[in-house]
Image 1 (cartoon, helix red, strand yellow):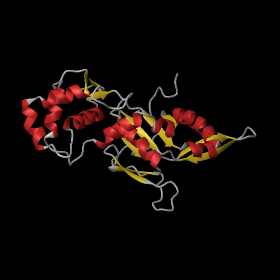
Image 2 (cartoon, rainbow, N blue to C red):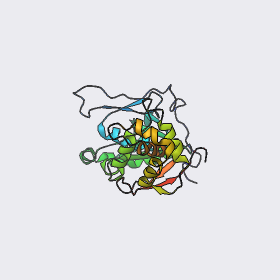
Image 3 (cartoon, rainbow, N blue to C red):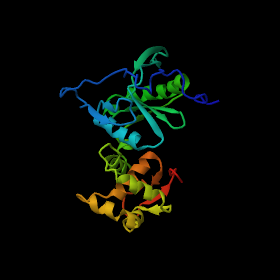
Image 4 (cartoon, one colour):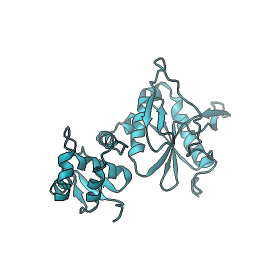
Length: 256
């Protein structure tokens, strides 16, 4: 039987709620060597995550644009584990991971963001990672992983996700954007970005919307598609840089 067959357990009850208190908070200031970054996200009950380094903030772009990630908890808990020593003994150690992510299927993924140069300087990190993979599965029913630049900044995935993230829904979105979203729900899929844009711009009911909001070259169809991908209504091909020929498919269209 797999160690995670029973799902997440032994986690703090308040972990994914507004009552969660991070087990650790990075210091703010220019002297802090990893330059903390405030990352805004609706998936954290507090509305933001205090990322301890830019790589972590970039990693959170992946989580914030993934429709299968429902909640982000920063510095979720202090994990105590037994680390082997050279003389075949074991010593108790403690570690606070960077984030815990809850997914739509109820599973939880715990992640540390560690730059490659830091891993090279501290070879013990690889040993700790191996121990924590087993420990998190056995004691918490969670997956554990270390992410570095190779996966966080993978191209063209990361530039595509960053583009999606810059178009995510905000309170400042024009109300007319909802009309574009509704029109997209009536389109035929699979399709392509360019076809969707042309189809909606040829829609007489939306002509006034596009005319009134044609400011600074803003493409409302592109914005709407990005937001629907983030919410899980659409899927978009992330394997190539976004273009007019990028495939778009229906995933879970509301009202469909």
